[in-house]
Length: 227
Image (tube, rainbow, N blue to C red; front, side, top):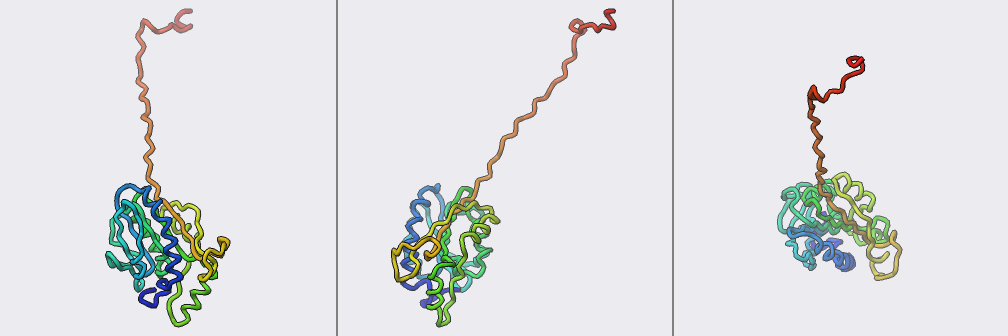
């Protein structure tokens, strides 16, 4: 959907914002067990960004013409990976660049391993950044389809993931770095969600009460027989 050299995400201001977001990745990656990480970004230009996934071997994809390209080429709603293949998944503004974000969230949840973490980044739909992006898109470029934290939380819950609190990033305007903007005006936000492990609850075996036949010598005579 948003590709090529005229991609809004490839402009210097969004690129600087996204570089800052990636500082959150190493700490979450370091806490994952050995395995694979999946990184899905908004455009091909971001493949030049260095992403520290620590000990996890990363596969990298990016949004391209409504689908995904990179290490593999596929549809966003049909990832060619087995269920639970990745210990860590990063979706950096890929949902902003794809037309079918609902199915995309479901696919990310499917390929996330039990106990794994999904880290999602998106533009804040209430930030002045969106007005700036619309202005820069006046030549006909597609505008990011920004989704808020509450909408993502509902989609994650429907896909079986438990989301944490959202975290805000950036300034309220692209040319004003570090302006101390309050959270509702900041450029972007992130949210981490984990895939709960299925816990087996042990069932206590019922005690079988064996019937014991009383021996005649141990039987207490009733009042009727002793009268």
